[in-house]
Image (cartoon, rainbow, N blue to C red; front, top):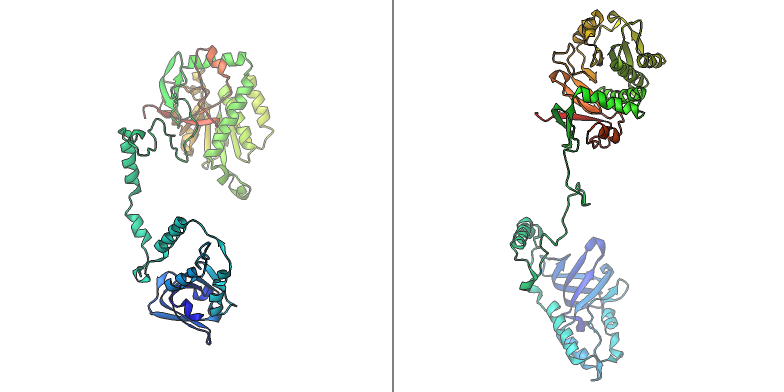
Length: 458
């Protein structure tokens, strides 16, 4: 029986160590329990030696891929006309514990089983297909690996798709020509990047704030939304109408203080500077406040910063009579660990981390002639710390303290170069209040309460 398998093409699995071998059976020795393959392939690569021999103990699995032609004919002739030969032995496997010759006996055990014969043309088609798949001589199999990377490099995917898109844009992708079309741009679903919105939306309108009295300057946000400036008279009217509807001075002071303190915390370093592991490097902020609403906004900001472990030094000159909002904010500030001084000489001699300027107001410009005002300006210029101005006024003359940043409330005024970088904060004015003073308003803040503004002339 061992001679019946000579010339068969088999696949031998020798385990993970030796790997897979394929070849044509050239010898089978039942005594020594060996099988030899000629023209062998090892793991899909043609071996350098013409023949290899395997012991039965090394074989994990043996599959017969193709029987010899004479053996197939002899097997087919064993069946009567109304039956069909058993399926070929392709894929039949023999385990490690089976003898090599018994593999042949096991593969031919189907000879005693008769099955209904299928139609003749069907059998012929199957045989032709098998011959086409497995009938080629092993000599014709290339002995080199296929270069997948090199072949893939020959395909210019971008150029091919560009050519297809160009063809479709020219109208050559219709279905009338009998060829398949990927669809024209009008009926093909658009593609999106990972950072693009897949939901259809209306075109973006960048000018969504229209004012009746332009302030002479326009700003834009980081996203391109236009924010026009307004005149001081319109700004004053806007706050008056907001107060009539319930947005009191105290509420505005609180919102301005929170927004200004949040901006100051960012300028001071945010979480990199203010964390429990950095208690020995607590930042110091000096506030220069006047006896007016602008000064009260600074005091409110100082209270919030003191609650965030920032060392606060608040300068406020002594006045016999001060506005009630200033007095109220000062009483709250005194409940913190912040320090209040009324003389410029009590301000620190060493540089501080930040100076917040609230000395000026839109009215009562005569304060600039007061000795305490000039002394505070001189101290700020000598300290050389960066300056943040809260709600600075618009004046023709140059301010004594040049700011690095300025924070505007609600809508900006047309500030000059002495204001530095301009920021805008939301103090909670309702949209209908803007409409009542003739301003068509749509919030530019998005998810933030403080946003940077850029001059349209930049």
